[in-house]
Image (tube, rainbow over all chains, first blue to last red; front, top):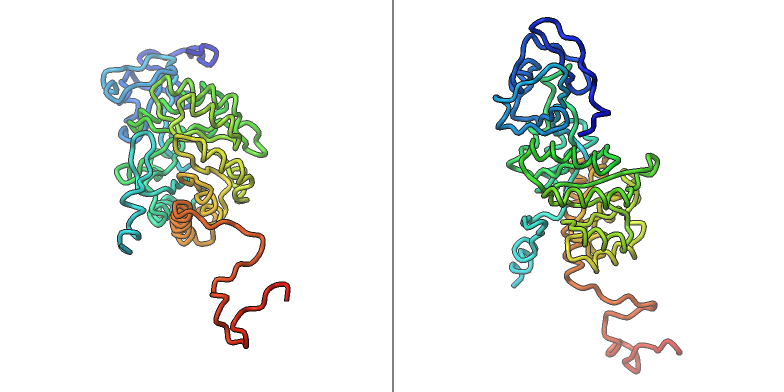
Length: 82
Length: 277
């Protein structure tokens, strides 16, 4: 959608990939699904929503969608607000 | 008869927004509370059925931090995700698409702020964002200025509810422009709620007496010394104001009008003296 906000892909070690989660570089030991990323981060999947490269990832695709090196994820939840 | 009147509010005066029916006309925010437990207790004390929530990044350094949904249960309250922190239509659409995925519903609160000092809404951007959200299938309750002309534009653009500010967000100054709030409430064919500025119960009652369909407040409850008691006060104020509006108030007069009979007083002529005497 908005290429200006995309980060350039960082170099990855063999079998390892680096993605950006909520603006922070995050190393993953291998290619994993969205659900795998949530598990890696210790997040309960029932309480969050995920955007990958500015596209919503429907909950139904958490298992089948795999992240790629350089992906930018946003993971959000509801907090108190007026 | 008396019972019927007492129960009339719940039975024959439902609050309907975007086709959903509610009993309570008080929407409460979930910000600024000491913790989510107090927040949940206040929402219960307010009798609220709808609570506003914000959408924020998860805290990656503490994935086990307390979650709002653990205290304010989505099956108990209708969540109204807001767009706080959004300054453009694109930001608002992006945020609410995430909220829709997290919650699975499409009823949302749009607020596009501009000036950080007053937190006044940017109405040009708000209208643009509303059009984008309506096109994307959202049902949008719109935080807005108290301009009746802009309120009409929002309604024409498909707003599910018009939510003018009574005073700046978090100011607690009450309804500063009752004339405009009344005009907006009179002309609108969608619900009108005063959102922002309510400081205490009488502010909420006044908003309802002006003809508003509901009130949204957060800080007035959260920052009260006793939030639970203020939540209860707000509930009663909204109900009282609604009843007063529906009852049709007496005309206002410049001079006194006696409530007791003027005749038969214990005087030689049996009459009260005229004002000329």
